[in-house]
Length: 175
Image (cartoon, rainbow, N blue to C red; front, side, top):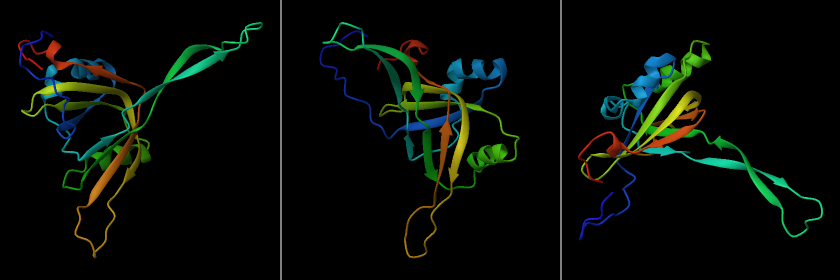
């Protein structure tokens, strides 16, 4: 990225994002995830919150004999937290149907595309999680004494997350 005098590089806002789910079975799913059309295509819906996009590295400690001032540390494997999506309950039942499909032993894994956009709606960061399984669906808390939205949430276990930078795929865009 070239530096332009006077141009600010502020952190991106965290409130403009959308989620796509893509069938991860076979080559068709892999091709869809790598396609810019999947990133810019129809979103699963508006979500008010997406949490759990983190990974950690396990460390193996080796205590070498005769060396008492150091414990050698080696990376072993990465582990990923479950991603939780929350949104206002609406007519779209896709989250429920995906989870209930697994309850009935008919479910299919899905890859997910989480796209963060800048203030003018241009994708700036894209995370792709692989082989997602909906492990927990939670319906709204209903209370007649409160004036709040009915919110559903879905927790997704997955087998890894990758970060893509859209400007590499969309020539001419400056971030």
